[in-house]
Amino acid sequence: MTKLAMLVVLLALAACAPVRVRETPAALAAQQAREAQLAPLAHWTLAAHIGVSNGRDGGSGDLSWEQNGDAFHFTVRAPVTGKTWTLSGDAGRVVLEGVDPQPDVDSDAQRLLHDRLGWDVPLADLRAWVRGLRAAGSGASMQFDAQNLPAVIEQDGWRVEYRDWFTDRDPAMPRKVFASHGDARVRLVIENWGDG
Image 1 (tube, one colour):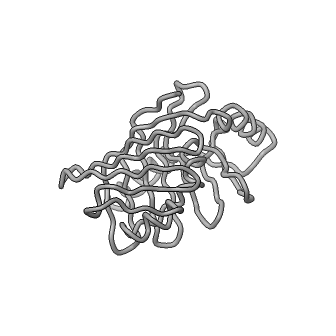
Image 2: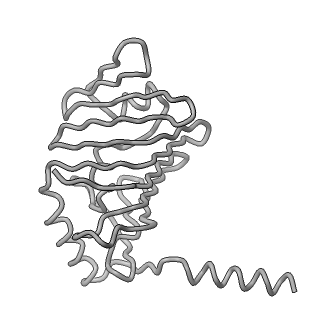
């Protein structure tokens, strides 16, 4: 009886899993249309819960992200400690505040997050991935779901999985984005999107 119950549970889970297909002409055409519509939009915002880990340490919090061209502003609030830090900047200069007594400044956001927080977050690529787009500058392979929305993007050594979508938006926007590269993990559960 126990084996039968376990089999029923496994079959139910399999039925709930999203169907993933490899790149097809129809799916790629839908993706190119999404990218043509979304890539030029310079100003957007999102609110999300973020979790980051490196296999040893991790952190989580509530993320507010505002993007305006190359300029960005992140605010992360840790729910347990109440600590808040911000990361803001553009393509040439980044400032991290709230971690050390004095602001930390660097020219590279990814390096600054790694050095000060131990987080491996590919911010330049994540800016595209979080919207369900391929990052510019390197090749990517994709899998799609039954609605021709991205299910997986593999690019620059990262695997980005899309677990849920806001399908009531036009175009649809990601709701759950899970990225991994070796021990590095970045998980975003997006509560809402805002347009510029």
